[in-house]
Length: 254
Image (tube, rainbow, N blue to C red; front, top):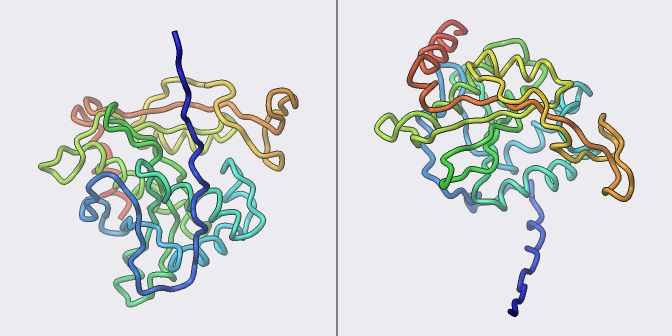
């Protein structure tokens, strides 16, 4: 028996520029994107475009430690966010980072850069499994404890779980993972109808040294790690009450 291994690592993502350009930004996304379903009366989700969204989002998100506390990466400057989040999302056709925009401000004539309420993403979309993870979900301080989280998560769920005739992908599963120390994130998912499938998936994520976490020996890569809660909502949950639950939550929080 003989074999070979021709694997070559992919080159790192190209540097992300925040400079304005006349060229449209390539989101490099493998699936049809229906922006009509990715909105509610108060917010809309649009692709994260670095030249418009990166600087104002990062400035607002880093005003307080708590906003980025449970994000796995440590940011000391805008470039850290571009390298660790924006670049990898754009490089993978199964990932998509979306900006949450405040439609009320937009309707009043405000510029898009001044209407950013947060970001939400799709991680590891799989046509083979017809499933996806939501994340990161970051709501800026100004919009916390408002309608924004409910509306953004609800719109993101609809795009995945509604059938194509209703503007969605017709997939089968949306999942959510949260640091087991982040009770607020677990509550947010449960509020949207997701069910806990695992209270603690141990050592599910590597963390940088600067982040809160559990120290790992050097021979296992060093740095820190975390345990994660796993929650999910599936297509049959959606059709048997969760769709109506989400619709009512959005209507109530107008």
